[in-house]
Length: 270
Ligand SMILES: [Zn+2]
Image 1 (cartoon, protein in one colour):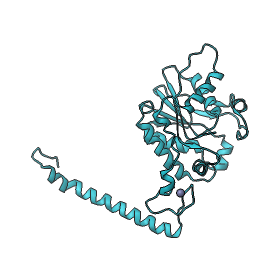
Image 2: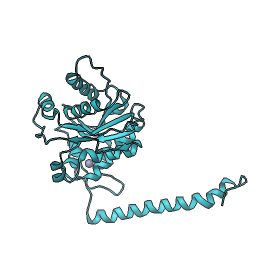
Image 3: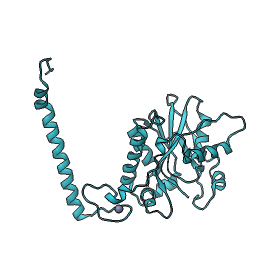
């Protein structure tokens, strides 16, 4: 029945808001109790320190959550990660080709001696897709508030070779990209970029060797013309070689009016 002008807010609250609020509160209490019960059977532990988690904690204990090594790069259009990527792109571009400054952001710093490296590792090697979604969603919320990322309208993951995806069961970059698309209210497309051949693992290679390793590996299928700001997503930014190769493949296929930015869950810090 339509509301009339003389319906008082208090009447409206009594008729609609109160039952909804009560039911939301009941859902929260039920979820909390359910988690307390499942924690008794299968205790959840902190990804970083291994401490048992309380019902109100998600993936990290309160102590580790308080010390999360956030980069805050989403707030800084020019930052060391973006500078490194742009320097690499500069090395690979044709002479006299105009060059945009590519924006880049990551949620966390990754250092091989810092236990917080266990967060991206949980997604990449531990099968913890839930944790990947949780931290990607957090990055997406931060990026949505940053002016230079808030207009992203298409999110594309760095593709994984089908054999590696089959062995792992999922593409870790796609897990992050999907969540970022959701929080940034953008489209998600995993079929725009493909990997033409399998590459050797890049762990022990330097930036130059990595660039050679991924040169010409990526192919582009049709990019939606309506996408004005594309976000390219990977799990970790190490030297930027993979993202550089993806960027160059995409850049060749799209017009100058379409921008490309980059986001990862973590960025390696020397
Ligand atoms: Zn902890």
